Image (tube, rainbow, N blue to C red; front, side, top):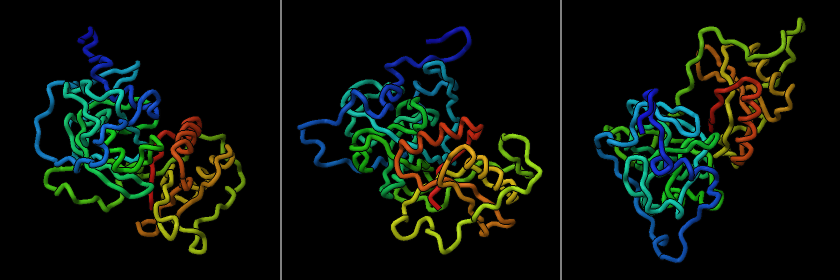
Length: 301
């Protein structure tokens, strides 16, 4: 429906994923039809023209504006996935296809429709390929909504949500290939700046312990799937200590500084974790926003 501001308002029937992102309240898995016994194979990426519907450059849902990406190339993000099922089965998706909860599909806020992405459950390393043909989610801290079949293959039906990594698939990469490199970090300023905080004291910032080899390391032993939230990467240890002090002063526990000597010069990464449950992540992100830290992201190493 066009409006005088040149924006596109996404109606509920087109923004199917929007209603399916709240932890599956009032939604459910299929029961007793026998189709859940055999799950489909992954979606097979192929070149497709952009859909006529669902690809407006800007759209608005519940007062929030979203800008659709011109291309999915290079997209990679970590965050929370949810799923939608029986309640929406048979309804229209944002690009006017019919939602089939038994197919390997997904909804995304800004990827072009259709797109293909690999979704990896960061808790169990299970990975799938889905075709994005719908819009959503708009629920806070959710980055993708999976079909019932896709969610079941990632073993996230019972919990309703999971921490995931979403990576766009380009057509020069075989669909079975996994992305092995770590996700790109947000651009880092040449001169790192401290986060908003009270005026610095004249005393030297209190020393903070850097994770040592004698301490439990991420990605080893029982922590091989450990997930952390990174809230800054600084070329100066002093700036990292300021960020860490800001967290501890506000009662955010389990934060530490990781001195990354694999890069030159050394980067001091401020991290929180491990993050075990989605609810823990949701609460943490809200606390960070209250501190003016709006760009945290998930890491596994």
